[in-house]
Amino acid sequence: MKQLLLASISALALSACAAGPDFVAPVAPPKAAGQFIGSANPGVSTAQADDRWWQLYRDPTLDQLVADALAANTDIRVAVARLDKARASLRGVRSDRLPQATIGATSGYGRTPDGQRLPGTASEGESYDVGLSVAYEVDLAGRVRRNIEAARGDVRAADADADAVRVAVVAATTRAYVDAASSAERLGVAKHIVELLDKSATLTGKRVEAGRAAKLDQVRITTLRDQRAALVPAIEAQRQAALFRLATLTGRTPQELPEIAAARTDTPHLDQPIPVGDGQALLARRPDVRAAEQRLAAATARIGVATAELYPRISLGGSIGSSSASIGDLFTGGALRFLVGPLISWSFPNQEAARSRIAGAEADSREALASFDGTVLQALEETETALSAYQGELRRRAALQAARDGAEAAARITRARQREGQIDFLEVLDAERTFADADADLAAADARIASAQIDLFRSLGGGWQRPVIAAR
Image 1 (cartoon, rainbow, N blue to C red):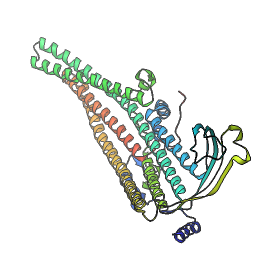
Image 2: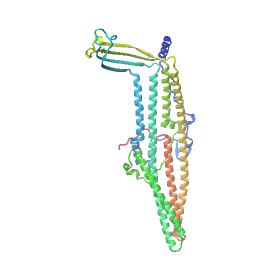
Image 3: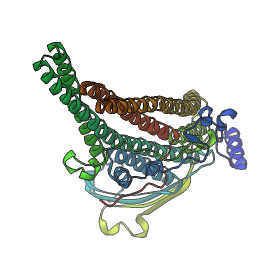
Image 4: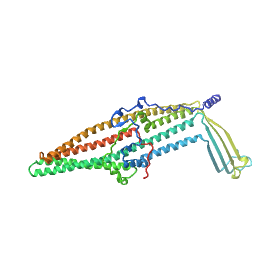
C-alpha cells in the first residue's frame, strides 16, 4: 500500500497536470459560417451587423429610451445580480489556492479525574487554551485548478446571460416604442375613416328626406360608421398598453414616462438595407451561444474535479498553541506546543463513489455539448426565419402600396367627375372611404414591417455591446 501511494504521488508530481480532460471549444457546422439564405434578398445587406442597431432609425427619443432601459431595467438588474453572485463564488473557490489559517481560544472550569491529573495539581480549576493552525493543500491532482476553471466558466456564462437579457430588453423597448407610434398612426387613419362615414351618413339622411334614397341605405351607412368607430377605442387601448410597457421597460411607473415618448405619431422607418453579416459573425455575437459554450467549459472542468477524487489529497500544515490553568502561564515556554507535518487522505480501495461522480460529470458535459449544438442551430433558424418573414412583409407592403395608389387615383378621378356633374357626392365619399381603407392597410403593413425588423435585429444578437448608460 505504501509503495502504491508513493507511486501515485510521484506520478502526479512529475506530470504536473490537472486531472480530467482539457476543454476544447466546440466547432459549429462548416456551412453555418457562410452567408444566410435570405441575405440575397432586397432589404438586407451582407455588411457587418450594427451592434447598436436601434440607432439606424435615427430617432433621438428612441436612443434615450434604450439608454434608460439599459440603465434601469429590472430584468437587467436581476441578471447583473446573478453575475455578481457567480463572481463571488469564483473568489471563494480561488481562496482554496491560499493557506488556510484558523485561530482558536477556549476557557472553562472543570474537574479532572484523579487518574488523569498530574501529581500536585488540583482536581478542579480553570483551564485556558489558545492555538493557531495553518494548512495548505498541495494541488497535485489539480482539483483546485479544475474547480477554479469551472467557477470561471460559470462567471462567463452568467455574463453572457446578462448580455442576452440586454438584447431582449433593447428589442422589447424598441418594439414598445414602435407599437405606440404605429398605433398613433393607425388611430389617425381610423378617425379619418369615421369622419368620412359621418359625412356619408349625413348626406344619405338628407337624400332619404328628399325621397332620393331608401331608408335601408341610411341604415347601412350608419351601421358601417358605428363598426369603424368601435375600432378607435381598441387602437387607443393598444397605444396606451405600449406606452405602459415602455415605462416598465425603462424602470418607470406609467406616470413617470416622459411625454416625448408618446409624441411620435408615425411608424419609424429605415432608410437603408439592414446589415446582417454572416453566420460566423452571428455565432460570435449571440450571447446565448457564448453562454452555452461557457457552460460546456464549466462542465468539462468539473470532470477534472471529480477525477481528482481518485488520487490522494495532500495537505501541509502545522499548529502552535498553549494550554494552561491560568492566563498568565499561557505564553511561557513550558506551556507551548507545536506540530508540523503533512496530512494525506485517500479513499482507497473503494472508489465507486468517486467513479460515479465522474460518470455524472461526464454526462453533464455531454448534455452541455448537446445544448450548445442546439443553441447554434436555433440561432441559425431564428435568423433565417426572421429574414424570410421580413422579406415577406416587404413584398406584402409593396402590393398594398400599389393598391393604395390605385385607390388614390380612383378617388381623384371620382372627385373630377363629381365636379363635372357626372356623379353625385355619395360616390365621391365611397371612393374616399376606399382610399382611407387602403391607407389603413398600408399603416398596418408598416407596423408589421417594423415588428419584423425588430425580430431580425434581435435574432442577430446585437444590443449588449458597449451599453449606453443614461443619466436620468
